[in-house]
Image (cartoon, rainbow, N blue to C red; front, side):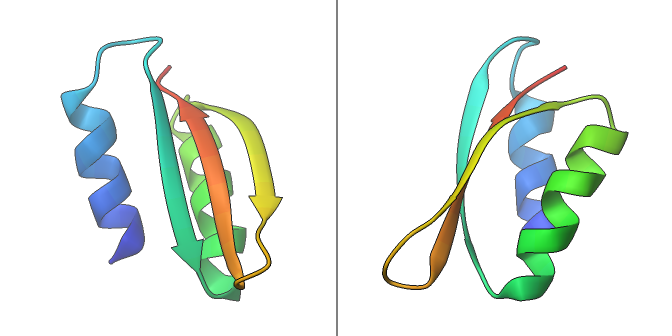
Length: 61
C-alpha cells in the first residue's frame, strides 16, 4: 500500500520535482527505492531515523 500512495503522489508531480516519503518497516525500505528507480525516478537520499522510520527523497524522472 505504501508504494501505491508513493506512485500516486509521483504521478501528480512534474518531472524534476522532489518527494519526501516516510517509511515504516523493512519491506517498504527495500522495495520502494528499487521500484521507484526501475520506473525512472531518482533516489536522492535515504536515511534511517531514531524512531525506526526511514526518510526517502525521490526526484520524479
